[in-house]
Length: 330
Image: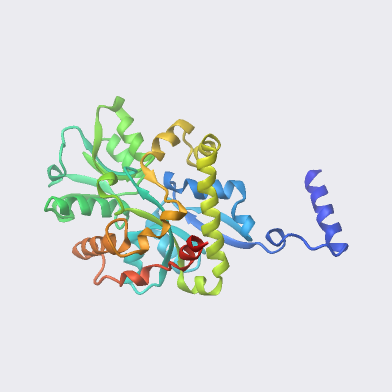
């Protein structure tokens, strides 16, 4: 009955020559790629609360279980925008693709981790052992960074390729003594066996800015529809503001999306950092981490060493800072 009433009122407005609001009359459909990740809380809240609709966008979240296929989905036009990690942008653009970061969404601050059985106490002890992780993913990158820091490479371990979610079952079943994944999988693994079987060997807190989740679009889409980009950024920032103003309500939304409890949401949020508008531009400025100019060089070196790219793309070709700069100017 309510739907019929709404339709009648809308029809009556049109017949009377009364224009409908722009967001309702001409909303641009946007398929936004995401994975199950605590760092995307602002996006989940923005989508649930209709924040994107205020800017004329009808955003549909498209959830991927395998984040390694997301750059290809964006490049092929299956989705209009996507969340990626910055290392994925570098790898994609090294292929000649023209993907652009328009904003950082979160920094992993413990949300990604290398996990191991309690008999393994140092990264160097992974040498010769089986390690479960998804190839060409943030897990792959974090492992490569950790091994390189200790003078090793992925050639020194026995890689077991699986999804981030698959790491949970593989480690619980005893097929490997180590694995790399992200929340909520990290918490599940650490808590398994009464919390006595596994521990965090190294987390992204020790590599701040190395794993940065970003909002990405093709440069052709940006050029064709800059209002889409502006709306995505503004809507996401509204989602972040909601999280800060109403943490309990935000936790409920995120908990429902991730299928975890609100208390788990609060615990996991401690492992990420969602930068505010004032800090959004830090990644675009030359300097130390979390600058792309710092992380990008390290990432590129590791990807080249591991044979994932032949040459690094110029850092300035991987982002478009105009939208964040414009918002910060106002």
